[in-house]
Length: 102
Ligand SMILES: [Zn+2]
Image 1 (spheres, helix red, strand yellow):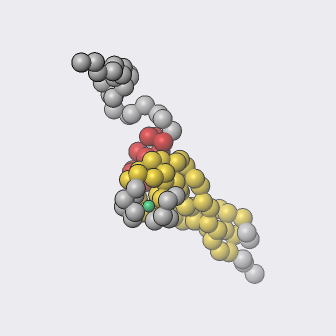
Image 2 (cartoon, rainbow, N blue to C red; image 1 turned 90 degrees about the horizontal axis):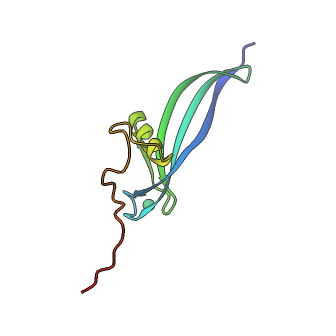
C-alpha cells in the first residue's frame, strides 16, 4: 500500500507597506509564499506548485502575484539595494530638511 498526498507550506517572506487594492489604505502587507509538496508516506518529496500572494493586514484582502513581482517586493522588503543602478545617494528622496524661513 502506497500512501501519498500533498502538504502545504506557508512562508512569510516580508512585510511591506503597500497601498491596498481592497481598502485603499497604505497598510502593512505580508508577502507570502505557499508551496505545495508531493508527499509519499508523509515524506515531502518535491514541490508541485509555488504561489505568491500579498495580504493586507488592515482588511485581509489577499492578492495573488507572480513570482517575479514577489521577488521584487521581497527585495524591497529586505531593504536590499535595487538590482539596477548600483551605489546609493543619487537623489533618493533623502534631502536634508531645512526649515523655511521668510
Ligand atoms: Zn486592505
